[in-house]
Image (cartoon, rainbow, N blue to C red; front, side, top):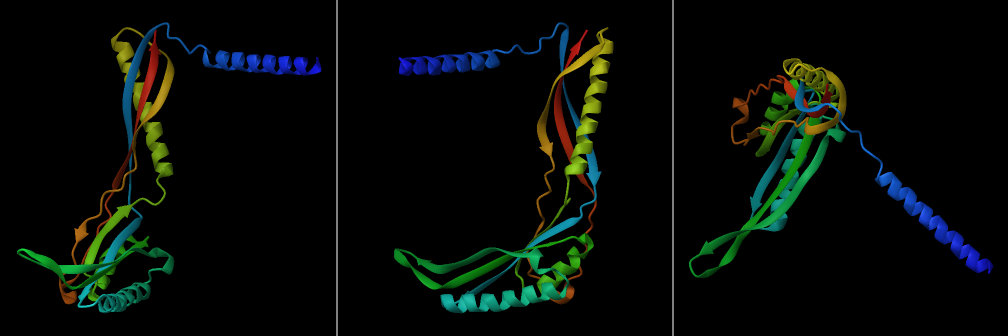
Length: 240
């Protein structure tokens, strides 16, 4: 009898839980008595980039895999040593790609023949003094880096700037809603919903530069300029 009562209690509790869940799902949403107006608005701010990132690498070729890797390691060590001498901290130098691949010679109706090996090593270099980008590029070229991409300029901590853009977007949406309401002979009663529509901060893609020039000809200037940070919002208003 006690077991049956316990089972009945569990069943009752389960029924009450299902009823509560159904009630929560069926909770009425806010209804609009007046006219609904949907507005999409964008807020934008600009900032001067304070971070520069350069990708640099060394590609070497040799008859054997060992020779290709050995030469590559030697040249890459010289590049990293020069970066450290230029003031780039160890934490801001990171290996991004290391690759060794055979090189083939192809002939008509003949299987490919391995003619040697190619080794490549890429590092990512990050630093805060954007104006030093040109000097860093020239240092890389002088030390034999033959694959260079960058600099990619970016804003280090964009959150505060994006919040400014969000606030500006809401102000724009309010002003636009007031304009529509006035034109329609109505007034804005309230905001019904707000949703962010993407946008945000997307740093520009880095410029690509192949370091095939002579070191003595290098005198690279990099200007930081400004970057645009924007946020788009969709806001629904009730007009009356």
